[in-house]
Length: 328
Image 1: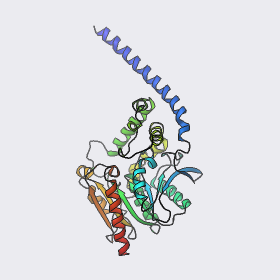
Image 2: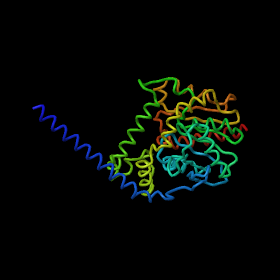
Image 3: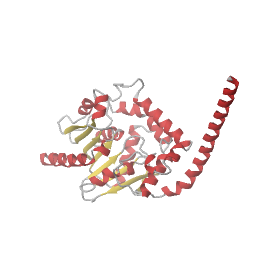
Image 4: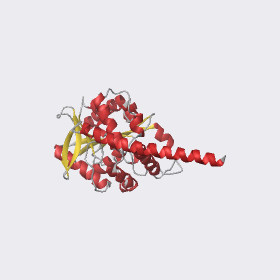
């Protein structure tokens, strides 16, 4: 009896191994066949340190400039943030930047320290010719914005955070393992399921199954297919995984920083994260300018507030900008 069970299990394991090997081979072939679809699929290339960094500009160049930054691990910041950029472009010149390793930007062997990332992004902004601008960052993009504003306070007019990462966020651990460890597990699981072709198979009939995006936005079929390819073939590459390695150190580098007085701040924070972390709201108040030119608005939603409260975020931003403009 047990010998028969062991034999069945052996064949099941061999079958599983064969499926994994076949899936990996088929997936590799599909990657080669779809690579051409990414050629100049969106945005424009900007040369930074001899490499190509992808940007997308929406809106009138005469309007105030907003530099839009995504959170960690976004397969395509430009496509993920397109609904927000489109809404903002009615009143602003919105420039979404894909850091090295993200979307259609080149990968880099340079360590993903907060210093290197911010300097590369700033070089991109310099090349575009922007002298003054607002920074708008989701998640880790908010932490990079905090460091950026402290390095270039005379250029940054204001900051808008969408549940941004902040110094001290790792001090409180709501789970048995650290948030960084959870991010690593999620990243490696995604890499494995991508490598064996499972995610490609599950999204074959519906590209939205492979992307994390605003489900209400009318993406074109081409945009969804490009987003899907990047999610399957480029997510958590070596450059992004190196950023994950430095995530805790980057948060620590920003410890003690707050936005300079000349930088007006508007932060939208997630009610879910406030429930999870008792210090979440206070940590965001701790980085406000000492002169009080800043606000923190709690919205009862997930970490991806720009999917759930897009119109409110845009309307509140316009109101607060007008308020601080009148105050001088």
